Image (cartoon, rainbow, N blue to C red):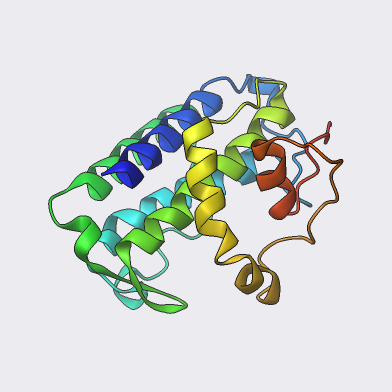
Length: 191
C-alpha cells in the first residue's frame, strides 16, 4: 500500500533528522512557538509511542498517562530510534490499517490516523531540520500524499486551533512550501 510506504519514509526522515541533533542543539528554538528542539522531538516520540497501542485497538483510557511528560530520558536519539521502530512495526502489522483507532476526536479509521502521523512527521521533521540547520527538503511523494489528505481536513484543523493561520506565499511556490504554509509555517523561517 502506497500510504504505508510513504508513512515509513516520513518516519525514517524524521528519525534521520533527530540523529543529526548535536548535544548543544536540544535547547534551540523551533518554528513551533514555545518549543525547543527537545520539546518538539519529545512530542513526536510521544505520538509514535501512542500509535503502538492505538493501532492495536486500545483506547485512550486504557493507555492512560504513560506517555505524558518527558519520554526522551538521557539518550534522546536512541529513544527516538526505538520509538520509530516500534511505531513502524505497529503500522505494518497485519490488519493494522483495517482497524478503527480510538482517538480523542472519536473512532477513526486507521488509514486516517496514519495520514495524521504522516503529516506530523513531515511538518515537525521540517521544524526540526530548520532549527538545527539540516537539509529541510521533505520526501516529495510524502509531501504530495500529505497535501492531498490535508486539503480535505484543513478547515477542521483551523477550526480546532491545531494549526496557525496559513502563511501567504509568492506565486509559483513549490509543493513543499505550499504544504508548510497551509500548516501555518513560514518556509523562510530561520532561528
